[in-house]
Length: 102
Length: 497
Image (cartoon, rainbow over all chains, first blue to last red; front, top):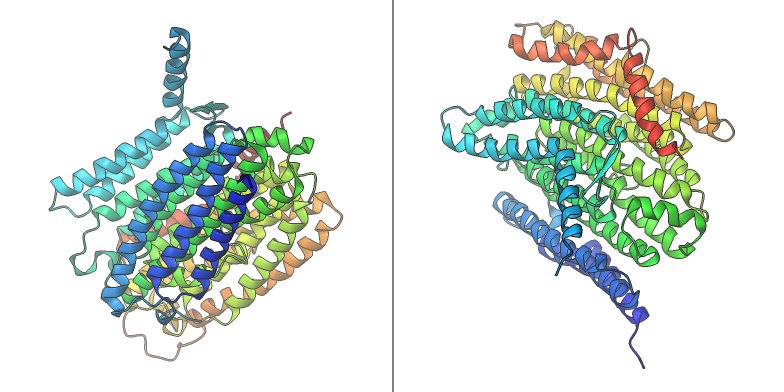
């Protein structure tokens, strides 16, 4: 069986769904971040698969490059914020950080 | 290798693009300069703030050369058109207002905190917002949103030893990065279906039915997530109350004004170029439903809040709902009424947050019960706060009324089912009066009997700044036609064929 565009799209859709699932169910902020990386990588996979199989121009690869850079910057910012949470709360469980509530 | 001709063309294009990019370059230079000034002049804590304010003014002057220009820069990545310029001015005014507000914030200046980075980050965020208001390419939109988000994540938790501020930044970064991640996934689908990332190209492809229905609608929904989060539209508004309550007041003001304006600039451009052309699904209905849900959730939740910042957060959600009405009608009047509304929104919102900040400087609290009898301790600022709240509620003769009037007029003029949208919006406005009145009631009607020990004293500069915010709020009704005219001209670019 030839591996084509559809297979890549299915893999990326599964990655996306897994990312959303991780973000919803995980308590640890680091694991939530990992879910986020899954989502971004799903988008990357889409961009590159479309560029490769769709006979499109180089736009797709460029877009994927930008997303990788943004993902790196995003995790740097998010990790520093999580570090700050750890200093204030001595844990990083998202659902136990709840000073602000209705 | 390269044809000399092509190289020439590239060089010329780059030169014209950089010339069109001057205001953004000025912002970048200001950003770097502010950081260096802060390091060099260690003794003066405000030096970075002054640098940024001067940089904003220079940017405004440079921006003036672009009024009326309609061109593309950097291979159509960024559009420099009247629409973008109008929004850039709105963003510049609100960022400058927030910078000036910050000089009076005790929360920010307490415990010998370094504030140089704070002002530089505001400048960086303004740069991101400038990019978003002109972004004409899917990747550019994503980059601009992230550019402004990164700065605002850090700013939301700038008072990092305060627990609630660090919690606010955690919530902001998680919600923000997830929604932008979902957005980029949607963009990848749209790219796959169309083969282009450019909004102008997409706008020509979509009406011809060259893009399949399923990817177009799916990606549309996913992309709305990213914009909806920025303008705190339901059902993507959950971060709003927590982040607004936890962040420093100045940053709350920045998020509720500048960030929302920039998000709307991107959203309007995207809607007018993509959704308005969609042959498969009537996005007007989708946006109308979102608008009704947003304003209703915002107003009803605000009713039982006890924290003033939280009340203003829900009011910001409700305002996003009113603004969406202008987008629903998708015509020139609707867009220009949004732009006019945002102009009025800047001053009333910044003013309200300014007074809240000055009060919390004195009583270290934003709880509504602590506001009892405050109106007698601070007569001038109390009166000014009432003006801002009346304007937010949309009661004549304030600027807020004018803004709402034009938005509702746009929906009524379209007629048909949109009349019902206006009716719901008017009912919502009536509900909103109740919770604005709650603040007023606590300040003037309660705690009258408690002994008024002494009046609070405020620095003349802080009162002057509040009055500056109050003047357009109160007197816009007298003379507003130039702004409306300008908004009309700026909105018309989407309808020139």
